[in-house]
Length: 594
Image (cartoon, rainbow, N blue to C red; front, side, top):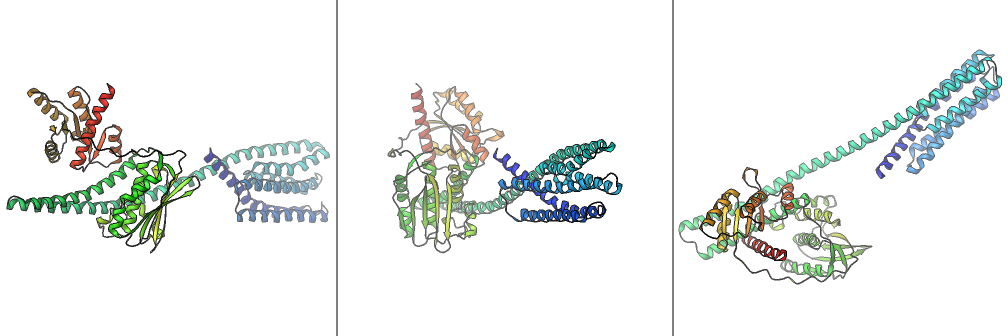
């Protein structure tokens, strides 16, 4: 409704602009025809009357010109457009009345030349109002009536044989012109509407073009940065593997060397996992599978947690780390809000060499602005928007991974948009920056957070594993076996079914859990494999989906299954914790259902 009203206002304004633009043509015709009329009627009408008539007509013409100039030079409010339209209608009525007075004095049938000139001139003026005044029909109707009414009255007064013919001619002329006025007005409205729609369409096309160009630039930057950041840890990992192979050829690998190589490999895989997890977070946000769970958040507890988490980073970098205590309550998703503030704080500590970092908040009416101040290098004003793009690091042109991967602020922007929290940055080059998130103030009191409980005790279970990559399958089977689990593994659901059937012939072969890769061979998915294996077992068992896909559409499909999703790469500890959680949760759900 609001858009329709705005479009109607634009159409109305365009029609009134057309009305005033056409007024210049009316002015020219008034000047030329009036001089010709004065010359033709000079012997019929007193000179004083003609001078007065010409003076009034030219004065009106000058006023119309000044009004038109003011109309086009000033800034108009939508509400004032109608006033300008009615002003133009008043000018048209007065002009029509002046020409009607000429028709009154020029209606002399006994003098053919003045009489015929008057009739022809008035007929031309009446017909000329259709293209010039149809933009605002009241102006046209008033002008026509004021022009022909004196002539019609004079015809009735004079009477005679020709009076009826003149009246019929004038009536038909008025009727025809009013009909064409209606038709022309509709055509003008439709033309203007189409023009406005074309302008809007062109604007949308330009926005889409700019968006496509920005996406293309972002893609190029993404491929360049991701290629570099992926190659570096893989390169280091391949060198470590080569080193391990050389040591193996020389004989048994010393435990100290093995621990050192394992530590370095773990660090490299950690860097690689950080990159992939960042990409995964962005893909999950783009896929729309991240759901917001709003509740009342106690900023005192949240700030306390963040204070402890970043205390060691501040100590290691020799920075002053201050957190301003607050008892305010806000309405947000606690985990997502903490993630946003954590990324902003990580960014602040990363780029602050000396000075310190401050976390605090301010009331902003019914909202709370959580602020993070730092004394870092600052950000130029023309680059404030750029820093929220993926893989953009203004102070890290060499792509040093110790300074992050350039995904933190991109995740912050997407998460804040999902939470509907406004994000702001103020920065002075050489002095520091302030990032803030504005959150609605809560109307209820947040409960105290429960203490963290210890993780459930370890268990050994029977697991079906479906993984079409042979190397990954072999390593996973070896790891699960070392953790004490019984494993039925294969590259497809059919292969796992066969292995499990063979185990059943030899004795009892229970299944407690299914782990399946999401994307399998021949277009099959892990969901298909889980359904087939559950049908083979004869009942539903807990299941985990493992995927290395960061495509938003695939993440959305996998998440829709309701199963827990593990994103590659995963560590042995993460896999073990997921197995324990799935099996313990499954047992609790089973007991509850009973």
